[in-house]
Picture 1 (cartoon, rainbow, N blue to C red):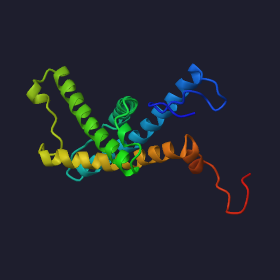
Picture 2 (cartoon, rainbow, N blue to C red):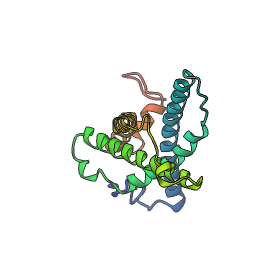
Picture 3 (cartoon, rainbow, N blue to C red):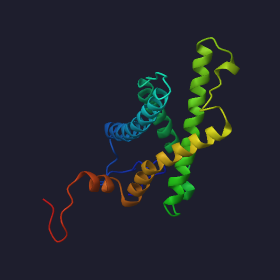
Picture 4 (cartoon, rainbow, N blue to C red):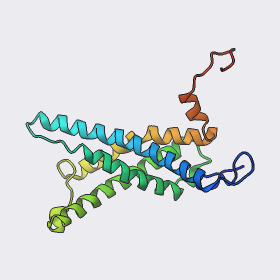
Length: 188
């Protein structure tokens, strides 16, 4: 059966509609995979920032931020995927939807990070101008470089998802997580 626009099969291989619990479990697995990837990515960024600042004698240890941001942005990412922003690119070579999704998500992440910083500043009683985030030295070049770093870091994630979509649900994951038999031998 062909997947719908949201990549959720209308019917299972047995010809029956998936149960509510299966849909929830599938949704959880998808969100957890996104969360895990983002958590590792943001934790590495945080550790890197900590190391760079320590070289200048500045203590920086907000390691819980990576966990919270990964959770929030995984939900944002899941919602954006459900909007099917790259649907028109499905018939093109995989590089197009992968790069499109990576760039769009990096822009969304930067915008959500900016919104989070502004809301946090306003909550603390700062003015809107004082709450505006400063990425790096606050220059537009720093913002662009941050966006490029995020987009490049998201390419492997979306490449895996797009190749998995083309091969069929579970095939690519099975290749990575199951023992592959030697050529000419059967799997056990």
